[in-house]
Image (tube, rainbow, N blue to C red):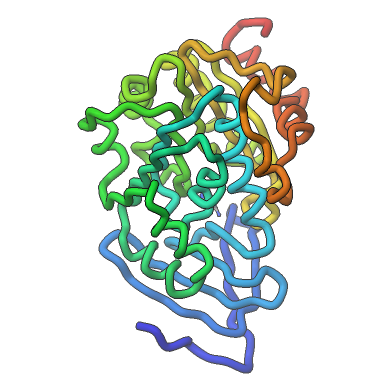
Length: 294
Ligand code: AG3
C-alpha cells in the first residue's frame, strides 16, 4: 500500500474535465490506495508539489490549496461576529480545518469526513496537515455528512461543506433535503458556506443550486476565487444565512480578532470584499433564473 509506483520517469495523470479538455500532470512518484468509498492517489510533482486525487479528481495541490482553503474558511468565519462552534463536512485533508483553527474564537470544530482513509493518507503524505487533527478543539467523525446533519442535536455557528464534486457520496450534500437539515442545525444567527463548482463549466448546476439555496435561506450570496488546479481554474463558493446579513463592506466586525491575517497568503479583507463582485454574465443569468432584479 505504501510503495510508490515508480521513480525516475514521469507518470502521466490526466483529469478529464470535459470530453475534449482537462488537466495533465507528470508525476515523479505515485501512491494509490483503495478505501471503502473511493480510489485515493497521491502524486509527487515538480510544478504542483504533492497532489491529492480522489476518484480521479484533483482535490488539493501544494501550489494552490491555500487559496481554496482560506476562501472557504475565512469568508464565512469573518462574516460571523463570534464563530465558536464550527462544523466541517468533508474536508478530510485538513486544509479548511487548519484555517478555521486560526480563529481564537473557535472553541469546537467538528470534522465529519466519511472516509477515514483520506485522513490516514493525508497524515502520511502531509504530516504538517496531520497536526491539525490533534488540536484539542477538534473532534473527527467518520460519518456520512448528510446522515449526520439529519440526525445531530448539536447546533453550530458556522457549517462549512468542503466536498468533492456533486457525484457519488457528495451528491447528497447539494440537495434540498441536506440544505433543510443544515438550516436546522445552524443557529438562527449562524451561517453556512460551501464550495460549488466552476461558473464556466457548471453554470447550470450553479444556477439550480442557487435557487435551492434561496429556498432554504433568507440571505444567499455567491463568491469566487481562482483555483488553478480545478476545472477552468476559477472556482465558485456559496453562503447562506437566516438572520445574519453579510455585507462585506462592514468588515471587520467589531470585536473580531484579525491577527490571523498575518498568516494568510491569499485572503485579506480586500479580497473578501472583491470576491462577492460577480461577473456580469452570472448576474444576468441569476436574474433570468429568478425574475428578480437584485
Ligand atoms: N474540494 C473541492 C474539489 C473540487 C475539485 N473538482 C475537480 N477537480 N473536478 C476539495 C477538497 C479540498 N479540501
